[in-house]
Image (cartoon, rainbow, N blue to C red):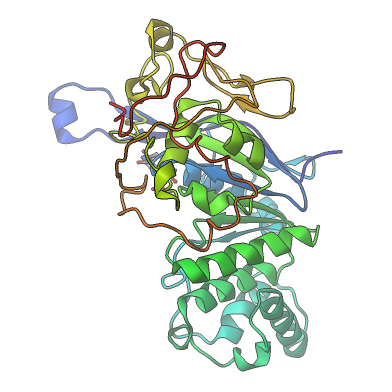
Length: 395
Ligand SMILES: Nc1ncnc2c1ncn2[C@@H]1O[C@H](COP(=O)(O)OP(=O)(O)OP(=O)(O)O)[C@@H](O)[C@H]1O
């Protein structure tokens, strides 16, 4: 059976126009490889998280899937039908089935409009919903599904009369009113308070659990996804470097980049914070991708092979199935390491000050067992783990 969303070898290259300085120096136009061969799938009832630092290509992937930009290469299928490169008219029915929820509940809602007109607008754009009464009934239903109850009390309000969480729920309701099969949520909770964030993410989880909707959740924040996503795809410099069931990836991350991302999450237990690996530097310029493994300039495990060989995504282990990583030396699934003593602090990968997340942390069902955070693997996967000293800084 075909997947709800099936993306195969998606590539999006931007050609950056030459500046006057480039012309004077006779430099050729630069090509930014924002998405560089991404394959992923989402099924109905499934929440898949695409995780990575700023600039890794997450939003470009989403825009290519939605047809907001034309990918340079690759296939995007919805329920088995290829939709990439369709013109605006041909794309229209597919747009209805794929809705996007954006990061900014303040900027994405027109402050002059009422909640009723915001949620009914997609029906008017797509010429759906029938009479005014029928449209109103659909808006009420969508608001209730988005957790705004009783919906009638929200209809006449304007965005400024709502809290941040309520605004994001209105944005979600405006997506739901068209009954989409696929929701792409780009950092839907990152601008919300911690307590409100859990509510919005819980709502997305409930929508998936209803079985009809699949969600691709885009985030830089691994802690956000730990309790909500069925599967994780970790993105670095335009490519997926690790993917698998959330629990498997978090319990036994195989790629050093995934381990560094996990390490950037502040652990609530101070005794378990010592082994954090600070990921130094920024994501390299996608216009100048390093040779070999693109992560090697920041990877403390890189050897000569990593500088010359570009590893493909491959199975980490036979058990459990579906866990892949693009590393020459992935750790086998089930590998655990112990945390060394020590303490260091670091901003998270979005550059903000680190803040414990009391809402997301207490339930650690899907999180790694204590002691794995930030511990890097031994060079030889078969050898006894030799954790790095606390506060190791990746170059
Ligand atoms: N229109 C464009 N022209 C040139 N480069 C672009 C364009 N759009 C994106 N890029 C570059 O592509 C890379 C990936 O950008 P993208 O916004 O997809 O990353 P991201 O992971 O979503 O980051 P963020 O979380 O900050 O949105 C970045 O280096 C960005 O500068």
